[in-house]
Amino acid sequence: MGVDVGGTKIAYGLFDREKKLVAERRSASDAELSPEAFFDGISLDVKDIMAEHGIRDEQMLGVGLGMPSFIVFEKGYIIKTSNLTRIHDFPARGYLEAKLGGIPVILDNDTHVAGLAEYRGGAGRGLGDMIYCAVSTGIASAAIVDGRVLRGSYGWAGETGHQIVTPGEGIMCGCGNRGCFMSWCSGSMIVKHIQNWIAAGEKTLMTELAGGAENIDCRHLETAFDRHDALAVRALGQMSKYLGLYFYNLYLAFNINCFVLGGGLVKMGEKLLGPARGVFNEYNHNNMEVFFRTAGLTDRFGIIGAAELVFDNGLV
Image 1 (tube, one colour):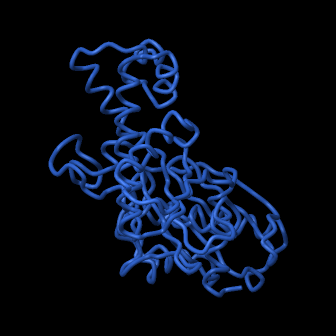
Image 2 (tube, one colour):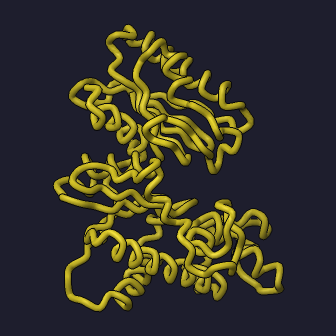
Image 3 (tube, one colour):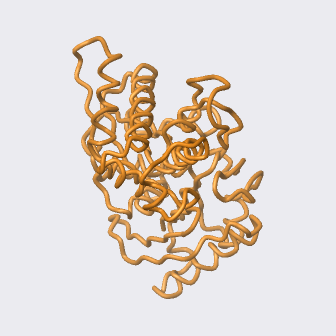
């Protein structure tokens, strides 16, 4: 079973040994729950899905979970979770395995999970190495090297959105620093920049479109951009600039020439990604080919990648 845990929903996918999706379910994700109560709910859902399909404990090969967390991979230990802030410093794998009667559990960061799904069955299929970039509410990456997720010493390799690009400048990010890439070009943080500009007296269509500055999101940003709103053009230009720098820094760090881009902001298409590639090319002074692909899977990539964790770690 693959379980995709997000800030507002939890998605479940039951797969057979040939990786065919057999059943799906979704439930609400409650950020107010304690870690114990949160994972109690997941264990109850898993058991209920198993019972519904007549699956005994010994027939369940494993449960993979993708979470928006810093996870010590080898231990399945959650250090912190960005949008489920009560889930921190918690031995999630051990707790959930006990609740599930010993069924093997594997936890990984949600970007690693998405990258694994795209590598195996999406836009990265057939590639040797690949970098998956999540361009959404947050910014992060997953490097696939020789067919395996590169996790690093503790498990959270790829939290590259928190690399510092303007030390001490800009808006404070949830990582505890000012000046990281995420603070300049993520979906959540660009809205804060826009709201600050409005508070300083700048005018924009976005205020009217959203029914107030406090309601602005990236949908209003894109609509205003299409109407040539100056503040929207400025915001999207800022995002493209820092996103292009982000891609270039990853290219230098890994020397992997294929980027697969996923996440909600990718739907903006060339408005965002065209100028970002332009910034990348401005700094890349050689003629070696670099490919940028859009993620190929539907919104099931979370459960697909989480289930791949079970296959990837030799449990099947």
